[in-house]
Image 1 (cartoon, rainbow, N blue to C red):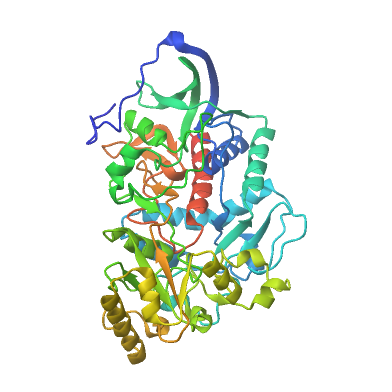
Image 2: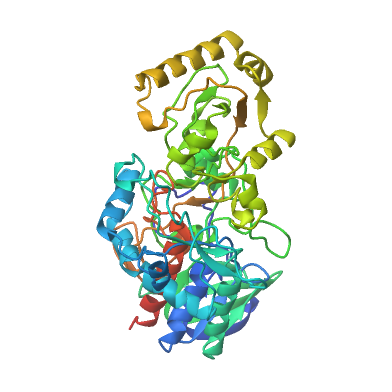
Length: 535
């Protein structure tokens, strides 16, 4: 292991000593891909389509995929929604701004250039997938999955260029999940006859030769039993993030160490599999971990009224933030509070107020009637997960105890348990600012200064959002190559997915919803091609 500033730290450990007698079998291919998630399957398919043989190794019992949001940019499907013409340069510049200029602009530019093409290529795994024309369109009956746009058409008052946090409506939503498309891509890879996929085969170390090239990997096939996968051209690491590694989380993202987590992938022992294996194995052969702050991904969806726009008080009864921000940013502010708790206050004017909220992850900006949800005018399953609200949904939240309601603010504050006099004074101050049309305290735009004056009144408790990943990985570039601590590319080592560094930093941006999946897909494809073309 090359010298690193982390050497000796317990979380990093050391590569296991494996004797030759413990290697039961050696397989050989042009490319070895470690991790059969979205990025890994894309890498395997891309390499195989260029004529390379591939060994695809997966820690769990089956290849892993989840969710379904993809930032599609100029994909062919975006043309159906009138959204194919996008300013990629501006999008990348906004992403850089939203991540404090600490991500790699070259990586983001490469993503922007190829994201649409990569998504069209990915859809080849599910030919003829139905494409809905609006967000609220009902899918064809009996369809296994389909494509819908996010927030299409956009709210009439929305003008992205004027927003503090711009949100580009470029997202394709594979509903109810993209797993059928994912499986189709795995099938396409296997049908080339060049891919061998081995599951329940966790890789425990990489192999780097005397010439400095990464030559393969060793996978555990049973207690004390191992398989050597030799790579003629290169190894692609696509092993996911490290959210389930408590020591790594406390080391690189300490503010999120106690945040609730959504563990999705599990191995045969039902143990979460996103434990930073690829990060550590890469570092053992000399790869450098990105220097810039790692970015947690914990979307705060707020209440039935969403996360943004409406006034928030902390448990001291004080306003503490400009609420005109996306759910990720509101969530970050909740996390920064000593007790990680706040309360959202809303009055009966919400049906007209939500129409002025910006369309973003964690916002609610479409107010509809219960009749529209009940008579089939709208695809009702969208109502609580893509910016829709109706009186019936508010009633449902009250009945479930997720929302408090009272006829007076005094009664509502009592029910929240907040300091009565301070909370009422804070709300009175806020209402005065709303009437004046100028937020002298936190600078919220008049457009979203929603007063809390007309009953009935509502309050929702905000606690930390569920974290779904930590974005921070090994130093990389726009070709998906890995770098050592001296700034030199490591021959034969490529990265994609959440083990790839320099894609995200500081905080996960909501500038382009579906960005994580889109970058994983795009750079999985790039990594597979880069490895296959290695001479």
